[in-house]
Amino acid sequence: GSEMCIRDRTREDGLLTIFTIHQVRLAMEFADRILGVADGTIVFDGPPQALDEEAQTHIYGSRLPDQYESESSYPRTAA
Image 1 (tube, helix red, strand yellow):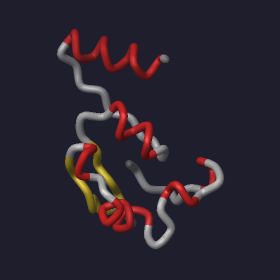
Image 2 (spheres, rainbow, N blue to C red):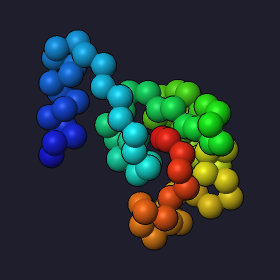
Image 3 (cartoon, rainbow, N blue to C red):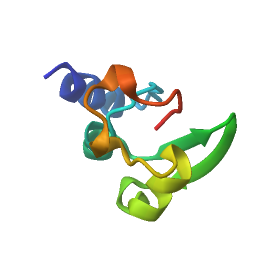
């Protein structure tokens, strides 16, 4: 997919890519580092492997992302 192409190309060229996504599983698959923001404050900064349920609760509150029916119903935070 296009995500793989972007990741491979930026790594080959030694570039930094920053994007905002609310699909946690996709972010965990492709990101080297994830920032989680809640109410304008960074509440998580680390590798995808460290983004466990507790960390996601700090970002999304009591409803974890997998509980949302569609991306449009996600809270406005960055993952």
